[in-house]
Length: 115
Length: 117
Image (cartoon, rainbow over all chains, first blue to last red):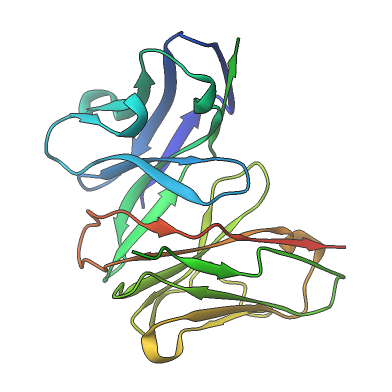
């Protein structure tokens, strides 16, 4: 079974400050890992994904994440927060179901950006 | 390219009533998923279809929930009778359906928000 744990259900940063959202995974096979963002009253949108190529993955809107096998982590970062980054962020791990992709999500981290 | 379409966006019903949600995936996507997202939690997979066959429905409460994907295109999720704890957002997603370890992303609709009173 595969799972992800997101540390901190709420994170608050000042505009222009570093954003760091934490995700640790558990997997018996090499995982594929994802970060999704959800704006209010909208569906989930893919930010970035790790699929065993480069360990540092760059996504949309200036976000990036680094896969660290030794730490079983896939933390999401952005050097400078913008007000428009306020949203909920979900880490997810992909597993095998015999056909197609199956994502298991973490519980989410609500990011608040303050002036 | 049109995205995943869901309807209705919002639904309010009383407990013990029934409700149905509809989803039309991205054209050509073989795999369709229904997720339940309760407030404050991450999405939880209810059922996964590959074309018109069920791949995984292990977390679907089958005594009250049912889903079908006739003709392998659009899908309907039904709840009958609804309980208070079914209040959630029901997200539909689709993917091209790569076999084996998942490498692709899921494309989500905007969701159907259900309130059970």
